[in-house]
Image (cartoon, rainbow, N blue to C red; front, side, top):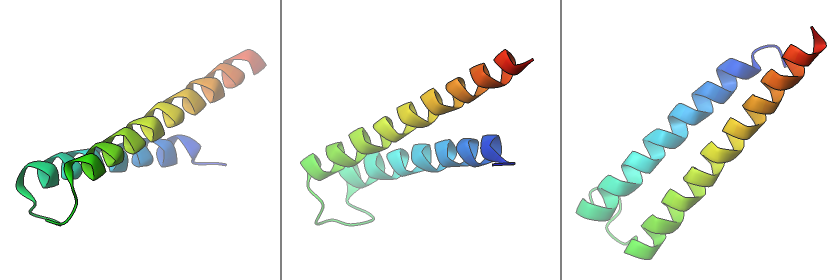
Amino acid sequence: MKHYTLVSKSALVICICFILLAVVNGFTGFINSSISLSGTIICIIGFGIAIFAITILENERQKRKTDKF
């Protein structure tokens, strides 16, 4: 992919925004009041795992890029 770094950074920003929205919704119920605290925690863990995976993939891509040169 030509713009992989841009896409991965955009995905990181989106995941961080979703985590913040989940936290705000967990405390206030502003977005969806029917989501329980356990649902909020599951969302936060899921987006945290996504951030971790994106970071690992980006680091591996950077290693392969530097090993070629």
